[in-house]
Image (cartoon, rainbow over all chains, first blue to last red; front, side):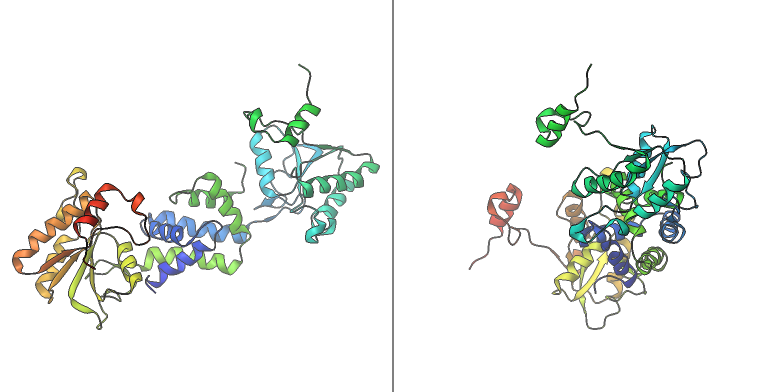
Length: 198
Length: 198
């Protein structure tokens, strides 16, 4: 034990965070020592608040401090479109774009038979329940473009199509600002397949 | 504002730490959301404790939760040697070695006329005061091997030598496990100069 106890406990706490090893944890803990008291108090309170005051929106599953969340309770949003995403961080990425005005549904995962995750283990049942009540015309299936995401999108699409709800998927293609040279073959072949006329 | 308020506040707090940008701060904040409640409570408390319970030892200037610190109050240590370091982290590095059994004195900086830091601005006066009272025979000047550290060592050495206290400096040379090829010229020339007979 080389550190006074309070600091070694703080180092342990920092080390529980992802990507922070012993050296960084030590650096951060000593940095805290020299921070303004107000900032440290704020930091300490925010940690507790995030853990105690946040919950998942009972409608869409997005993380929120009020239920229903600010998106679900916003009367100005288009209630005929629901964008289905895997994670609460995806909602934030979509919102940063400032173009989408519909609602969301957070699955908190994707179907993955390999890991024993079926449709019942993620937020699919609550989505189906929601479609019964609301006037939804389109589901944008914005799950990740990998095997789990694609099969989740496929599963939901098949479930929902008979009810007459349109399902769409985000476009594949070259990232804007990207370099043709560095694009992988699959992306490139998608970009050719879905080429648009000028 | 895309995040619920508690989480955006936590992201702001994480961003105040060194080397943590917006992306990492977001990742850490969302990680906290999924951490065990006990761990978050511990984290929050440690932050406050580090800020409120830690102080500098009135004798050596090392960071501590009791005054005098556990090193100064350890009767088993050799009170005739004081190792003078720039920073409290240097004490920890020395202690990790488990070979040094003397006392320490933390300067909290180095003399740097360029930045307007003179001997009075760092813990030099308290060191001189300490030498009057205690039975010190040797000062190991373990300041950093750069211009500021060297001149601080030189300054203290000149101040103390007339009183008959031996002053020493840590050895320069190749780092153990290092590669000759990658050693800089100055280090290499020191390694040649202080070569030892086998």
